[in-house]
Length: 288
Image 1 (cartoon, helix red, strand yellow):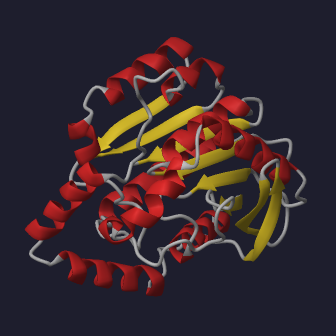
Image 2: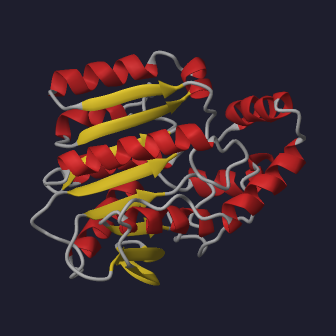
C-alpha cells in the first residue's frame, strides 16, 4: 500500500534510473494521459459514461464502460490510493474492449468526488490522501462491494448467467478480497496488483476471508513489497491451498509498488503488460 516506506523505495528506484523524481513524475504522468495503452486483438467497440451509483452510505461517482452490443461478464475495479482518474478509466476501457462490462469506482465518494488529487507522486499528496485512506475500513468496503455488484447485475450489458470479476491496485488489493468474500456466489475471479495489507496481524486481515470465497485469484506482487513483507506470499499460498482455490501468486522482479498504472512514477511497461495478460487469462478461464 502507498506509505512512507514504499514511497522511499520508489524514490530510490527513480534515482537509480538517473532521473529526478520530479522529472520522472512529470514525464510519466504526461505519457500516461497522452498514450494509448496497447489495444487487444479484435478490440470491441465500447460505450462509456460517468455515472452515479447509490450505496448504503451515499452516492458514488463511477465510470462505466462496456461493449456496445451484447451482455458480458461484469468486472468491478478498485483503484489505488490516488483514486478514480483518467489513467484508471483508460484501463477500464481497455478491459471493456476485451469483452467485459466494467465499473471503475471512486472509493472516496463519501468525502469527495473524483479526481481527488492531480498527481501520483505520493509525497506531494500524502497529507490529502492519508485521511481519505483512513476513512475506509472493512465495513465500508463490504457495503460498497455489495452495492456495486448489485448495480452491475441490473445492467443490460452484464450477463447475469456468468460469474463476475474484480480487480484492485495498491489499497484496492484487499478490497477485492472483501468483495470476493461478500458476494461469493457472484465473484468467480479476482486479481490484486501490488496490493497492500493483504496479510496483517489484525482480526479483520483480508487473508482470513479466503475460506468464504469461491474465486480463482491472481496476486501480482511488487518486488519491494515482497522484500518488506516476504512472508505474505506464503501465507496467501497456504490460505488458498487449504481452501482448495486456485491462486497464481508471483513476485514481479524489477517491478516496484505501483508499477501497473500508466501514470505511475514507477510504471514498468513490460511487467505491466505481463500482469495484464495474466489477468485476461484468469478472466477467460474463470468467468464462465
